[in-house]
Every structure is written in structure tokens, then in C-alpha cells.
Amino acid sequence: MKTDSERLIRLHRRAAELKDQRERRGIALSGGVSLVFAVLLIAALTKTDRFYQSVTGSGFTGSSLLSDSTGGYILAAVIAFFVGVILTAVIYKIRKRR
Image (cartoon, rainbow, N blue to C red):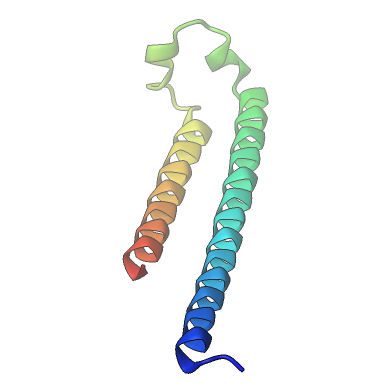
């Protein structure tokens, strides 16, 4: 029969293992979500590129942002920024709980 201190040590080890498993799942989930967002962003950029061939094909990359037809690129950038902010806040909260 094991003593109380041995049981307590084993209990703490098991709790640490479960916590590590939970963290690995969270990291895998955030990696999957990031991958999905990256694919969606690339898909959105390829779709907007088809609609705005004249802007991207002109060769004036700096001045093309001043054109009226660059709304899709700006929208994609704003969405990517907000997704990055949200992911950063979530990761910060997860790390702060530790």
C-alpha cells in the first residue's frame, strides 16, 4: 500500500500531464484556425486579383493603393489585422492564466 505522500505526488504528476494535454490541444486548435484563416486570406486575395487585373497589372504598386478599385485589398488587410489582434489577445489570456 502506498503512503499518502506517494499518492499526492502521483496525483500532481497526473494533473500536470492532463494540463499539458489540454495545452497541446489548444495549440493545435489555434494552429488549425490560423491555417484556415491563411487559406481564406489567400483565396480572397486571388479572387480580388481577378476583379482588379487592371490595377495590379499596371506596375504602379505604390500608386495603385490610391485607386478606387482597391477596396478588396484594403478589406483583406483590415480583416487580417483584426484576426491577428484577436489571436494575440487570446494567446495572451491563455498564457496569463498559467
